[in-house]
Length: 178
Image (tube, rainbow, N blue to C red):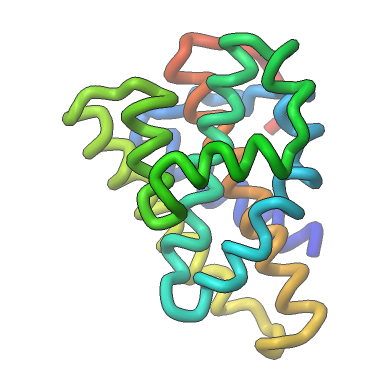
């Protein structure tokens, strides 16, 4: 799966750089990255439930979640980092419900104006579409352990892309490995 994740990461970064929402170097934020496994376990039941009928939502919402986590890191990580990941995720999700989690994050967490919300929604939708296409082209049988692993790696890369986009939007110029 590592090769799949690396390939997906490079394709997503190429698109995000083209859209000028990330820099040439991928930012590193260990605090947010270390929360991934916990956030995955909190998000996975909702993401899996939605995937068959709404794959773009299932994949895209976790990118918004990565953005929110980067914003929380910047605001007050001592508070947000200490929260139980399930409670943190449920708090985000339950503000407006799963279907409107994107709008809650864009408007209330990131505090984007109408134009910013529209642009970010389009970018996340394109990333979700790219990810879904690459995921579907993987040579794994649906419903298998390998399929679940590929899906989880897709979610991971989307989460990291959300983190990178938000760190860039906040002006962080941390240097990392590509």
